[in-house]
Image 1 (cartoon, rainbow, N blue to C red):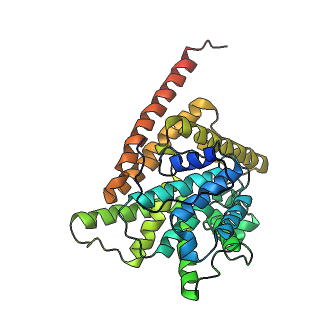
Image 2 (image 1 turned 90 degrees about the vertical axis):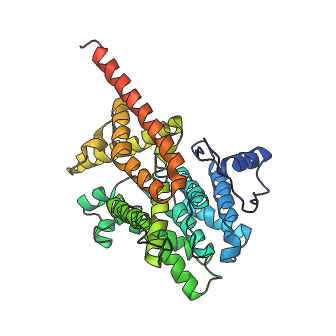
Image 3 (image 1 turned 180 degrees about the vertical axis):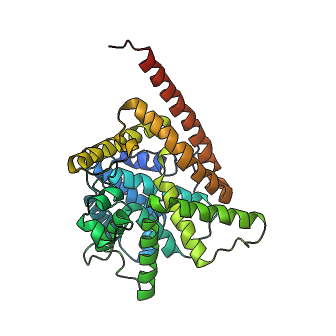
Length: 345
């Protein structure tokens, strides 16, 4: 897979990690094929700090290297050990956001916005408990009541993020003025809220409309603040949908983890007498392959295709995604054929 070239300053890697870990970080930082699954908690923390340092986070926020690491470590402690929605997933999204930021031709308004986008990526699933918004709403949970059944998880993630971001001990905004703090909060909150799949179509419609305007020259290509914030949301949403453009073996591992979370939620829903979505009940390799074909075909590919029409640099990911669709289809067909050929009891 292609490695992104980056012209920014060399990152500063923690002195207390081994040479092999340093080399691994350097190799993975600009590589789209990176996977966080085999990394330890400490290595993931170090990797996240390196990404943030590459973005000049310490300079932008006025924090020390030790303070930044303590903040990231606290974020890590607030991710639960779920199959999919865990710290490795957060690091995958952070890394993909970083690469998209380095790749797409979007002139950021300020270094503060760039840092806020990366912090949103790192924090976007804080305290996730492997249950969906639908579960919280249908079960009439306190969390759903608190947020009026609207983007329940995303509001919880964003508020959890700011309980850490604004913490007197590990918080990272102490050196900013009031206006900077307000802007940082706006970017982080809006970007995390936009990871709710319920707003996926709205963001897709925005991208499609923007593409039409850019094509017919009715848009100058200079984005107003509303458009700019929406584009940052689209970058994070794209990064959150990273699995279809990963190497197939990596994609399989993450898809299986998500299937386990889905299956466990369905079991809870059955126990509570709640409705459940049939696709979340599917288990085993054949259901997994079928589900991935459907998700990539009807959700991920249209999104990535539209992103690539606004940002041509994304086309390389569409090519990888299309190849993965073929591999998932081939796997599904092979499993179907094997099941049909198996002797019936």
